[in-house]
Image 1 (tube, each protein chain N blue to C red):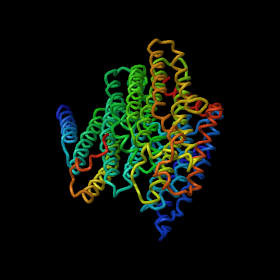
Image 2: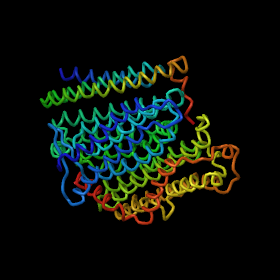
Image 3: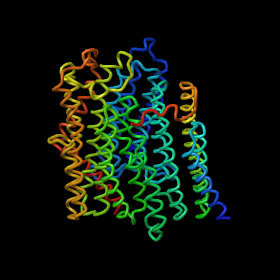
Image 4: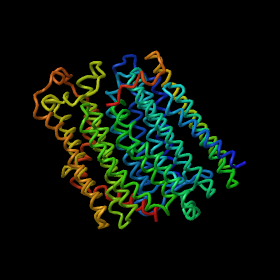
Length: 502
Length: 99
């Protein structure tokens, strides 16, 4: 029973993706304005995936291991898998509920839901992999599903442009990953991450070269500066639900894949830690400066994701360089979960607004910052939830973003290293800088007179859209007030990270 | 013999990256990615040769071929769609997003 849990965790969404697509073809409504009923199969698929997830989590929280072997391939469910799976399942559920009405008028809705379920499967699969090549395979599956989702509006040139940029850069990144695997395999003859560290310890140059290949390859997916150029285009042009998934979990999964792969090069961990610190600082600065000059809301959020990857990379850098305690790693995993909820909420709230103002009337132009003028008067719930999301992203107490950022900084401060202190101050300044583009959004929503676009928007709010926003909003508020609610999960994840780099 | 293989790997990677950087044609972009993957795949096979573990190397190479083919198919599908919309395969014709 226990060994089959991982298989159920993977097979349930995988089978759901096929069922959703096939049944969706038959259930496609003649009236293209109505949602395809297959979406409810998708919700059932996510609900069913929660069952093996909860059973696996109970085992992990009780200190038992959950692993299975298929041929030579071992899949293991650890603290990191648990946190990643929880994040992707909650965010996936919210995105699917949101998309019921949002995607209703789109051609081939069933493909959207099928691809979304494949994306969820690949993220869970990646988090349970224990060898370098399997990580790459799950990573490619995730990439392939996201290429199609980014370019889902295939009759729009901007959507295709974003898809092509994303595909080209991500595929070029995959080449570096394969080269890194080839270097390690050619030196040790192994691809299992547990076997490699002892065999590769004497080959310092190979470790550095392979590590550089992994950081470049996976770094493209994580949007590490200067490999981030695909992200603002892809996130702004994809359907809002896909933007939420990309920003909330896909880029973070790239980081998990990178960490798992670097754990095979454990003896050089401290060197990689310094690279993470540099990348973290660059990401925060470039992301925030990029976001400040945006007039398009989703593009602004995309740049904000680059800066949030900076905070996460900074926390990983503190952990790998100093390894004084797991406090910064705790903060990193807490921020990964929080960022998924906050950025998911921000993208979905922006999507709900663009749906009411434009999309429902056949206008596919992007949501501009000026379109938000006075929106609280006509859509108070959307305005409230978008405000909660952006203020949490800006790190305002008592919302979730503040606590996780604080935890990362506090973890770094434990090292008492002057460079760490400098980086903490730098990150703090960046967090304040981010309010420079978040606060005006709230100001426009609440203090400006409604624009013509707002007045002309449709009044009826979708119940499923609102439900998905409220679901994420609850997490953002609750985790800010009671961060200990998720400490079991973040604690297990940071322990798993410590084991990987011990 | 090893030197020849290493030169082939580096040659394929060099040609692939060079093409990726200079080409403005979407179809040629996909071809450049294919050349790159072939170089990386040869590296995996060469690594298997070095450690005398060709079974694992071959199975990895075959899996990479499958993954790479899917990426190429999606890339080509997007390229065709761009051509249908804009009547050209020139990447500049759809380059409007950078701000």
